[in-house]
Image 1: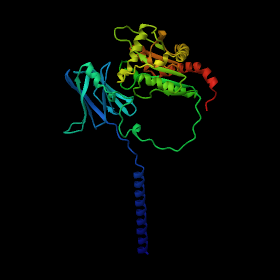
Image 2: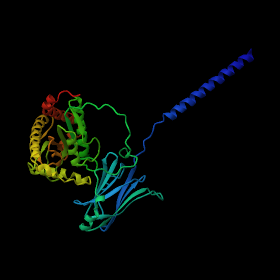
Image 3: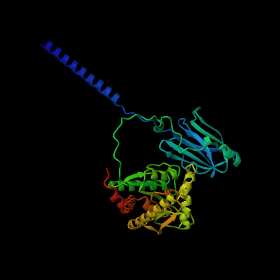
Length: 428
């Protein structure tokens, strides 16, 4: 009996061990099947430097892996643009602020999702004498190298062949979403059109264009935070379809911002900025609302419009061509009507904002902002305040101020679009 019981005990232990082993193998197989897919990390740029003199200058960018790139030169102002796939810039503080030889300075940043851009400001005309991507070797990282050679303007202009001129977006990595082949999707029943008015919010600057800076704060970040707060406020009631020209630190050319509004048949376009006075030009404070005009309302408005209109040159592409069709009588009539609506909204906006924030002593102004020149979309540009003024800067970084002021702007938008909502009917 003892021997029989002992055999039964040993058999039971064996069965338990087998069951436990099966569970371990099953869980291991499940873990292997459910292992998360880790997205490839972005290339890292760790350093950038200049060498050479006013005849031949070399630009070097250190990377942890080789990347594809495209480089081209532009005139007026003279600069070289380098487009690369999106990278993580971990350059030492102050990199690019000073120049050497043929280079005055350079800046870098995200220009479109999936693509980064480096803009090298030149002291004069120069051609790209050599460009290469060097693989890592002998303990040195991969390097993107450009050699810039001094030339006269005539030679410079001749070197700008059609193939070398910039496209609207930078080169992307082969594996990036934009480069991937489109996937086939099953046919679905088209959704009913959204009848809600479209409001386009345009946070100024972004990417390589920081805008004004003061107290360690960059305008591009301040206005993006405000734009997102205004979007969230407008989307709460569901009355509008809100479109952002950018939702991250991306550079968007001025004409593309206008195209976004027109392509969406926007009922309203609101561009968000934060101004700064140059040093030794006094102190100013408060919010200002601008509408477009061929003639600036004052010298300060003219200065600001000129500064904002140069933003595309900072991004490496100077888009200054204006459509010649504006001479047509129909477009002229549309522009006049649009300006009337823009002025009406500006007055409503001033009335609401003055209850929530400090306004400039002359809160309504006009100037020739290119971003406001859509002939068929009522548009305003709002300077939330002056980052050069400590009181205004304190407001701009305050979440409570941001929410309060965004709420006042939402109320003005409600009042302006009330008639449009009444005639459009309920959204599907």
